[in-house]
Length: 150
Image (cartoon, rainbow, N blue to C red; front, side, top):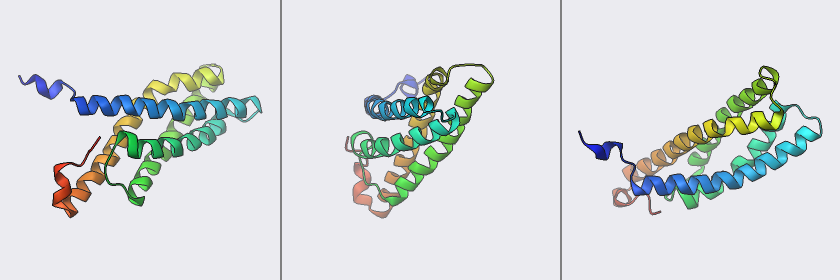
């Protein structure tokens, strides 16, 4: 059995660590705005939609340079935003279910969703950037040698 198949590469671990840093920055915005909106009486589902959407913009700009180096376009941003639209809606419903079904306080429901959203978002966003790099490499074989300069 080849254990290398199951051992993360240093580049992947570096990406994961850097994505964690960008996620923490986005999370600070997300949780801060969410707390203000919930305190103002906005239902958890709408507060989460608004706060998470704002944080996505920050995470995108940090991720495109700091985490997933390479050539990126408006198409990448559309893929990134498209994924996050689905993710935000799904996790907003999850947060609201935590409040309505399980009786959790809104902030606890939000925090409980974070490990699941982190994993889902890392995998999806990494896929979006890898796809963009592969498409760019197909158009320009010279760039295929080093699609991820990070």
